[in-house]
Length: 235
Ligand code: DX5
Ligand code: ZN
Image (cartoon, rainbow, N blue to C red; front, side):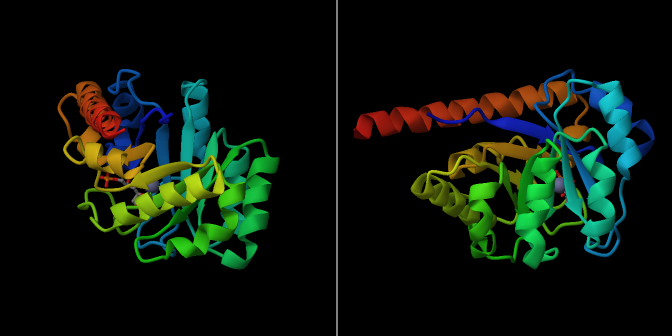
């Protein structure tokens, strides 16, 4: 049974002076809201602080707020987000890998979902040891740090590999891809095994973000049902 394909618009792609209006322009079509946190050290950019997550929670009490930490000092930054209203917090496996189990456990202990992310050059092998204790694996499909980049094609293979590892190991983590995703490549990443697509600039640069999300969803639905139909024929 295939998981529902979810879309998590990344507010990094919105006008920072009009974040609330940008989210409202999604017309409730979004499944999650993706909040990129950057420290100017792990990645060469700075973005938002915990106050934004807290305001999002106050403004949209039922939203699923998906926080992606691209930071080096997890000892400083993670506590700031554990009680910020986040629904899920994803940390990079490249940040303090020797503490990864404890970090993921601390996120779950706070009552949140826990995710682990890998950058586009980090082997999938690096997260293999924690696949049994995460709710999500985030495959970066661009170089972390900026929106508006093109999808790195060979990251699709990592998604396929994670889907195979999940099936073989009986795990139940979601697979998320993040960066360079739009309505024209969403079907391909879904067919590769992606369950949650993060899209920033493609969605928020559209003149009609809500309709854009509708179109992304319908293209994915058509591709998955066709693939399912072909699989039925082969059986
Ligand atoms: C990049 C962030 C992504 C980015 C996605 O480091 O993790 O979430 O905002 O933006 P687009 O969809 O514009 O690539
Ligand atoms: Zn992100």
